[in-house]
Length: 378
Image (cartoon, rainbow, N blue to C red; front, side):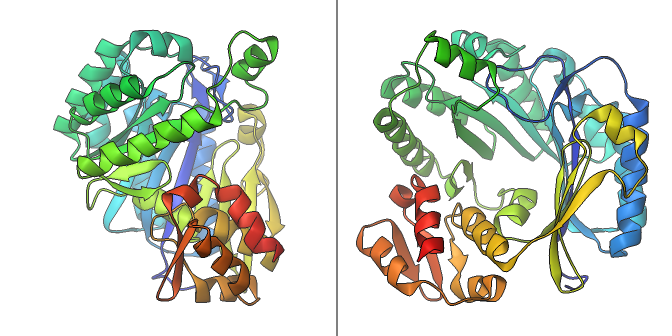
């Protein structure tokens, strides 16, 4: 580990004005300003700087929850402290997630002035019926206004869409995605609707209120998204993420490329290399518990085994179109590359071998988890 190795900071703001029925993130209903939590975040930035030294950050990411509920002055104070105690790299990326309600869109200029240079909007759909089904607190008109405003304020912006909602047809998805791309954002994240344990949607499906799309229909919509985005000049650089050249997410690439990142805020995760060991940390999940504890006592630390690291490296790296470096896998995992199994994947059309790298085909990325299991078990 050197000061030239990339490292990022993730800040989890756990509050939302509404809890969406599909979401299984660590979130809580907003009940007013939480200055104690803001103070805890500032304390943890100081604490981590004491642990790792002055290592300039390549990215800061305000995620959630809904971090745009933060006051812009709090965002400014957090960024300013990061500059002082860590330093920032040239061309650093500083992202905040926001919902496209008119109220949050009204704060975009203030966030830009606070130091944010990349915006991620949770659009999810431009169809009022789908937005209602997803439990969102904005409508299609607000979503359009927010994107139109965002692309004028932020050169680098992104928005999310959810697809594979019940009964969604290919023609509907083609029209919806083409319409969304026309709004001008250089980065789009496309997430297939998944039914997660502990969510309201899980209970609804169990009750028989509605049923998810069959796997083969979901796969067809995925393939269609690849086709449409490629035709519009978007690179499918990760399973769910598409960008015009130069607008790939710097911060998320830290996760996918097995680099280091610090996570602060309730429920945040970290991966840090120190003393020849890679460490995982997860913070306390409840905001009050998090804010009450002292810095350094807000997380559980775990040493990752070579096997753990190898699995993470495959699970994250094979999400990327660029794939993984085989020699780096051997270094991280402390074992030889499973050449026999990878050759089977190549023969089956699930993977491609290029020089010293292995990458999955679009077909292989749809079967990511089973591919990783095959590689790890061989």
